[in-house]
Amino acid sequence: MEKKHQINIWYALIAMMAVLIFQSWWTTYKTVEEIPYSQFEQLLSEKKIEQIAIKENTIEGKFKTPLKDGKIYFVTTRVDLPLAEDLSKYDVKFTGVVQSTFLRDILSWVLPVLLLFGLWAFFIRKFAEKQGIGGMMTVGKSKAKVYVETDVKVRFDNVAGVDEAKRELKEVVDFLKDPKSYGRLGAHVPKGILLVGPPGTGKTLLARAVAGEAGVAYFSISGSEFVEMFVGVGAARVRDLFEQARKAAPAIIFIDELDALGRARSSGGMGTNDEKEQTLNQLLTELDGFDPSSGIILLAATNRPEILDPALLRAGRFDRQVLVDRPDKSGREAILGVHIKKIKLDPSTDLEQIAALTAGFSGADLATLVNEAALLATRRNADAVTLADFNEAVERVIAGLEKRSRILSKKELTTVAFHEMGHALVAANLPGCDPVHKISIIPRGIGALGYTMQRPTEDRFLLSTRDLEDRMAVLMGGRAAEEIVFGEISTGASDDLQKVTEVARDMVMRYGMDPDLGNRVYVTQQRSFLGQPAGDMADVSSQTQREIDDAIKMRVEKAFAEAKDLLNAHRNELDEGARLLLSNETITSDDFPPIRPLAERENSAAAQ
Ligand code: ADP
Ligand code: MG
Ligand code: ZN
Figure 1 (cartoon, rainbow, N blue to C red):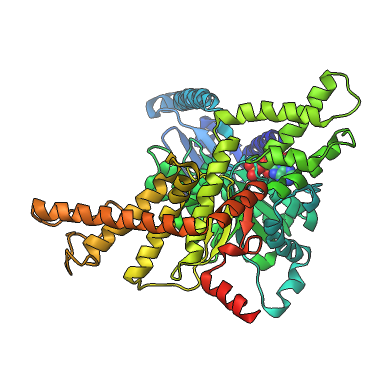
Figure 2 (tube, rainbow, N blue to C red):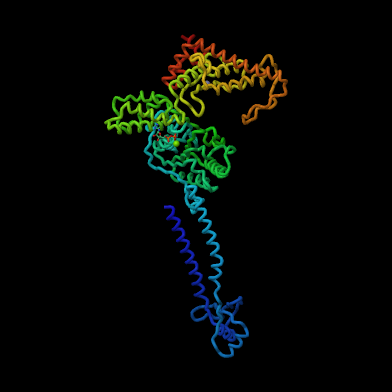
């Protein structure tokens, strides 16, 4: 399609040139008479010539009266003077002839240029092929692999287990269905929404579902495709993408793998940096430039929001983030429900049981699982897929996933459950702590095996000694629970330990909170703004240094002891909570009241 266009343009250009050349020739032919030199001399002597212009090889001039065919100008080729005088004696018709050097001129100019151009094109094309992108004729012109779909079949029903994300995106659908009346009260939807979550959790699927639900065109492009060799191509693509979408509005623009493009500027490598920056800048420009009321919504997906350039996340750009997390047990059951529609399932198969077996699986993993199970059933010539097939398939899929180390064994999960419940219970039983909002043993991101989410009730800038000590006890709660329950500790708490040490260190060295060391700061520099290691230790005697070390150690130990005491006192709740966590994978304080803050529980007890 595009190629054909280009050829057409070439033809048109050639035809135009031909017309121009013909036209100039024709006007010359119509008005200028070419005469022999002898005739020119004669006309001259007859005084029939009004004016002449002498050129190197020719003489041009104008007749006093036009010739009978209307020609008023003439041109004759010069003959050198002595010869002309001689010849005019003999009454002979003569004229000069100019040897044409036109062809020679052209060739000497054009051939080298053509040759150079050809060589250049050849090498560029070779190079481009190696890079896996098209030939040079498309450079600069966007040949973006913009993927457009006008009739998206995916609906919200096809995406399961991510209800919160769906709820947020519902608003976008409503807007796209009727952009005009949506803004009737002055409300405006966000321009850019960033879907954040681990790979395979359904971000791409959700974006398509939004387009499908709203019935609008879906433009998508992947950030990694912008990593191009020619500077400026990416920027042109972005421009083109928005232009196309604007024509098709209302529409969704979906940029997958935004991190490949929007990596924070300073942290990029060498080489393609310039290109990425240009592309990113173009994207920012387009983001700022378009008016959401035009009916275009920008969606993007990333699994590494932390490396994105902060400029992308500013207000008015991708200022809304939607979390698309790994599904918990009930979420997995729902996702299985979506995918088993494609296969023939034995009616006795219990999806909940399969969901229980697949802790840590993402939506994509579950889709693979269903397919694996169907393949196994087919291989044994069964009529339908049974639970046994799923059991075997789970093992296969896990074997694949374990290489990527995302799946925890039963024992590991139990450890994580007690660990997280330890954090939560300590937090719930200390007055100065933020309330626990949610606990989960589904691994999130890299490193963390589970998490306990505390939601601060207010922003706090001043913390008392007691607040910091409570905070340390909560951080030690995980390890304390492990020790109480298993009598041994695991490596899972290293992150907690680092944080706890930092707090203790700051208390002793920065805030002067240690009674023995007194109101003194022991670090020279402020911590750098980028969070680099704390400044050097001030000049202190080795004696003082030892005291500092001891003080830090003492504070950490004290926090650990406090956490242990608290958990021992609530041992039953620890067991019960961990059990609940193991079976549900994610629990909130509504599911398990003992993790509500102390004050809240006392209030409700008093009310009863
Ligand atoms: P992501 O973009 O987050 O990496 P995808 O949207 O590409 O993940 O998901 C890949 C496939 O996995 C989908 O096509 C779908 O079959 C399946 N899948 C993932 N998440 C879900 C979900 N929440 N519900 C149903 N299917 C899902
Ligand atoms: Mg994707
Ligand atoms: Zn922990």
